[in-house]
Image 1 (cartoon, rainbow, N blue to C red):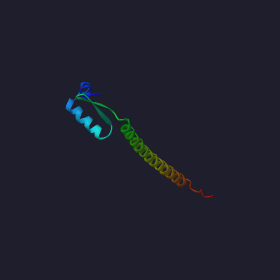
Image 2 (image 1 turned 30 degrees about the vertical axis):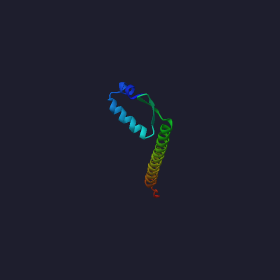
Image 3 (image 1 turned 180 degrees about the vertical axis):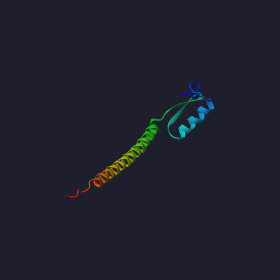
Image 4 (image 1 turned 120 degrees about the vertical axis):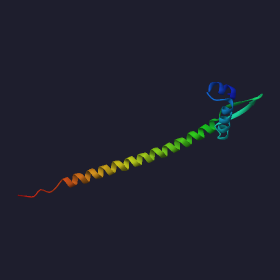
Length: 95
């Protein structure tokens, strides 16, 4: 899609769209091709897949860390409950 087409659909100026596309191109997320005096931009599926892999890995690590923390908290609560139950069971004296 050309810059003019994109800017017509967005609430930003053509120069702003061009600047954003430049950054996206540097990041490997879009590629461009000359078409006369225009540049046609399209998504670079390789770059998008790379960012997808990174995000999947990051979220996988974050969720694994969250699961570990939740399991530690649950174990600590079970241990505290067991100590409380053990302390409340006192041997009764015979009369």
